[in-house]
Image (cartoon, rainbow, N blue to C red; front, side, top):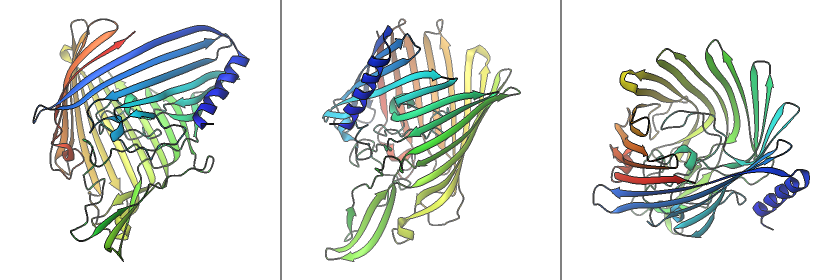
Length: 440
């Protein structure tokens, strides 16, 4: 029997034999979006999402949430089938009904309280960070990069089968998570619209006369030994919201080990993708001072891997601890304008002159927003720019709430910079977006 089906049947059996439902909440979200390439006027995406949600509230306080999703995109180079699916655990892999249509049990979890401990068991999202645009501590769940980082985090984050325990001791809230679900970042195929080409992320193509042998992704599959575990402490101290975080996980991005050798077919570079363990220590903080909010996240990764300029250098990668942090400053300006700025910095601790990125990497962001017409009309502008590579992304957007259930939007995703940069690799993918969302 399929493991996913077996888990769902066990949960359903426990629910129906322990308690009786007394209340049912239900809703369905329909979201459609059309993306038009600004360079040639072609359709870059034609996206439709149908997402029903059922919430069962039982008379003993237990709550069951179930969210399904049907996701379709008629443009082949950005459709669900353009995503490499090797990184999914079989019990978490969405069903690919066709190249254009994907069906998924998005979330399915039980919530209950016992002796002042709150339990959440099932397929769910775990959100630890709240930075805009890029993630620092929000690394518990992997994400899909089918559209790079353009999708909302709630949509791109991949929920995992998780046990979460929450307990309060005095002024401190404790959260423990156990994730036996070995699912990692879902990366786009190389020939898809948002396939990675930046030397920050993929090795350079071998020169003429040298063969490339790309091996199958080696992914962990032991239920207990390859689980991820984490602990978060949350407290409030003299106006500061504070957390301390720890996560023992496999890095969600595979390491691309490379080896050059002479074979019977001639000189060959063999690329072997593997996942490697890392310890993540982190903290978050925020405080409000009149019209200003200071916030930040700090993450220390004990073991990260970075690409070198040649497969002859240390098998194409160098391992090093990484310090990654973001400092944000938000201002509630006059005329109801909200200004949010952020400084992201990544430091590779182990020195090396052979990496495809700088040891110190800096990205700046700014978000402007204002609401009009009794908060039914909202104008936003998000700008992300990498200081080292001189590339970035500009995202203007206008949202209009037609009524309580329907909203429409008009926006754009614009890239600039050199093709070797994280953002500049997509400088031919500029697009205008028209979309709508209906909840009933």
